[in-house]
Length: 349
Image 1 (cartoon, rainbow, N blue to C red):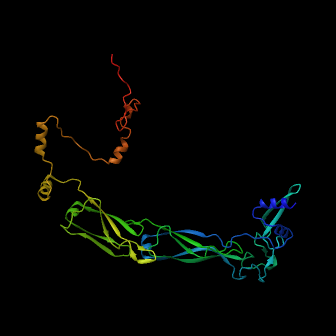
Image 2 (image 1 turned 90 degrees about the horizontal axis):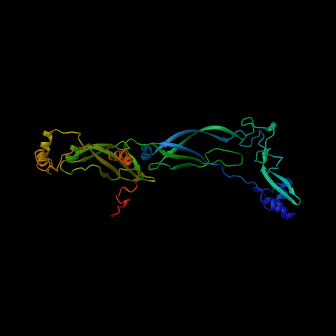
Image 3 (image 1 turned 45 degrees about the vertical axis):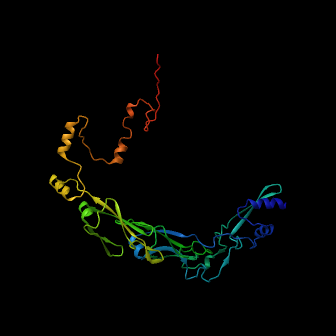
């Protein structure tokens, strides 16, 4: 009886929660609960933009296709503007099916109305709107102006409420969402509100001073300089220019910093004459003396002059990872840290 009906409703997947609702739906009444989204799903688009657009702010115009309400019938779908209730579901948008499982046991199943598609209304053939053919919506192309505000970041969302277009009758349009994707810049990289860049200077500039220009994202040219005698620039050093980074979003007068990584380019070769001049100029003593080197090797047979070669240490160590393993005879005791124990012990007689 009643207990069996309640049990059947529990597995019905969103059916009525009381006996009154069940019998009301069975009899064609309007008491059934229509469950559907009040608002359509958002439409998401990725929008690629340059670092300069995020620095200065910009407005992009994009043409998108969407469904809009038919203006001729104002979304009614009919020439007369009348709304007709679906006779199959009596306007509920749902159909209820009852199946006998056994003596005293039934199962209720609920599905979208096959006649009206779940909207609860239908449009007669003789009253269909000629503009939308009774579909209530038309396809249109609209141009949207997307405002990229100064200081916005990669991955930030720009939301246009209710601009996604209609998806089905009775459901409000969803939001149109643009997700910003920052394109890679040839000079700057971004770290939060700060900008970072690399500048290569010569050894002469590192010792005697330098001057170069940085093309800022707003078109200005920033002159960066170190006067002769002011300092010696060390390789891989950093300098900072305050307030020349990215503007803070919604606080454009507050800006991050610009950090410049200075790389020093050394000459590949200099002549002996130039070396002699450098020894006279530079304050540090040079440790190399060819006459002393030859004399030291002749005087001490345990001392030997060796030759070196330039290497990329990371690549070198990677290539030599398996060096010597073929001669270890599977002896796992030769650990890298030298802590392997003696495997064979000699017995004294």
